[in-house]
Length: 609
Image 1 (cartoon, rainbow, N blue to C red):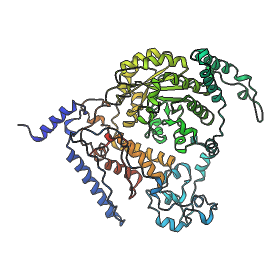
Image 2: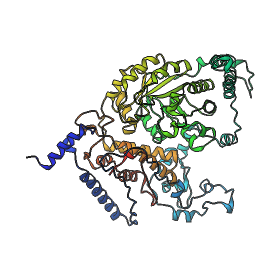
Image 3: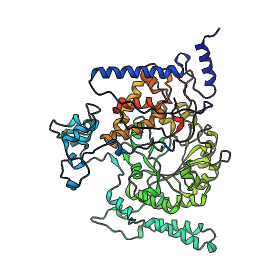
Image 4: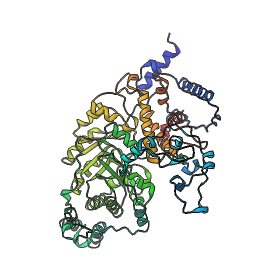
């Protein structure tokens, strides 16, 4: 007669065939035992810390509720009403920036911020750690006394210390490019930025519209315009300041644009929210060849929104870097391309015509462009005309599930001047409910030749990547696979399964936290912003199942992990899909969360109890 435990394991085996990953029976457990172990271990570790110090006990945190549906299925969709705590909520009183920089405050007594250093230091939250990553790396910390690691670089009389040798190494070096200047932001807000090339192209569109009755649909005159203007570029007078160089006189023809070698590259997909600069740096360390910024709205860029321009930032380690923009009209997209071309350092610009979310699609952007081919063509041709770098396009198989249209668009896009196409093997309606259609990607790759076509969808191991390469694609784009295991790039390049340990994974999270402190700051605001993005990433990382625990290797991306015990406490903690456990991991790296801290993952399916 079978014991209860054996029955439970056999039930788990049955469930595994219905979408859960097959894990060795000795590691399987129940929900209650899983959370019971984590809670008991965590409480014992907190008691040990409390006995070692006389610190005030940590206040009880608000419990996060993620109850599933009555039928036991996972919740779907986005947490659209999730709390968005403003960064200002974490600082009761901020130290004036002029005090940090040892300057006189221009606002004097009217300044809103704190000028009393002793009073500020008394009310400031305790330091997170004894060493400051920014100070140890660059020789000085720009956040001074407001840094959450301030004791590492502050004297007893509240003076900031510096390491002269390190400061000298990084002097004059720009680590992060594509920052929007205040001067440019002011001109964008006043609408005083000149878009000469864009206006020239857009004028032909309006002229064609007026002469449509005489010239048919106006395609002939539009093509003639692009051909003529590209040949006449050198004839225009050149305004110079100082000595005249070849670069001033010789302008690029379309065939002489900067070329990017896309062949056989591993491309990290532009990932909204999680594809931030610190995450891209982590992926670059593991072997990602091409990186791209998060999707930016063209209208917000043209209006000078600081938050949107932050998505264009590029770290010096990103050797092949692109910017992805979204829009639905030729005028705004063309002007946006010219703005990017004149004010940023990029290797290519990508048009997002695959975004499935309602906010974008209902305005005619994202997937909506695939069904509006006339506008799509004008957008591509206009952007191509004003850019000095290659223009790429990301598309899906189509909008409706059983109506693929990518194979009709690809031959047309070749004539429009696209340098590379990325095809996600799902339609808008499908989202992630079914596997990517790699057979269809194979067909489209043949149609796209000689233009490179990248395939995207369901790659979580080097075996998946090898099968994808057999389809004839020029390269592979990896999205969710990189979020679940960023070391996938190393696995693909070395053709192996990496049974990475929990301590190695924690080191990856430490690197991300340090990169986040560099990028968002080491003060309270920067720490909490880093924590928020870390938690968003952990909502994907927890789906990874260590290779040594699997009955069948490799793990498939559509397989959800059942409840299992890891080979140690940390591995078990990292397997939890409970928000409170992710917060515990963040506290190991970034200290205790503030009293008013709240977090909900972006997607409802990313957390449960």
